[in-house]
Length: 202
Image 1 (tube, rainbow, N blue to C red):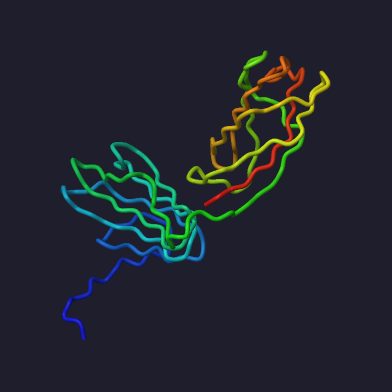
Image 2 (image 1 turned 120 degrees about the horizontal axis):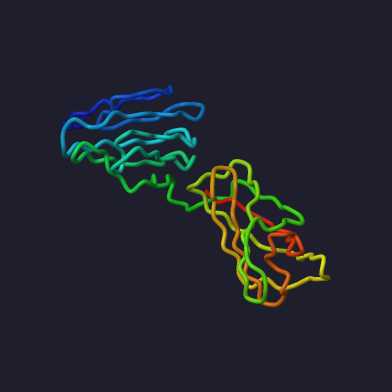
């Protein structure tokens, strides 16, 4: 039998304000919203571990120098460590993923005839497209590809590069670069409709 003493973790099963222990195990069947008070001394280290795999939030008025929130990835085993200094909790802001197998696909879909939400016109223009991706989190990676692009000017035209990010929970913004068609990117709807395929990795 080991002679190393065990430390009892703080097991969290409900949302609310908590006083963190050194080890905090989040064990709940649904997403929790957790709030921690500012630290009262320097050099405290507290660790939060998600044991069940949900997109829990951890917020504080003194997190990373201000009022901020950390969102867990939704993967069982994800964890984050906070260290106290000068009245704030400090972290890298991104919980480490559990399992070690890398991100997995959690959702995929398509959107037809998406019109630009903003952008320029002309060859070489960049247009911005924002559309709904249900359940997408700010910490997710989203891969977007384009299929046939339809325009009122005839089309199709080529898209040479796509850049995508979750711009707000449940919404993805894509930057599409036009290399050939002067209508691409018109925010007035003169063309530039795209068909997009998307996949969310977590």
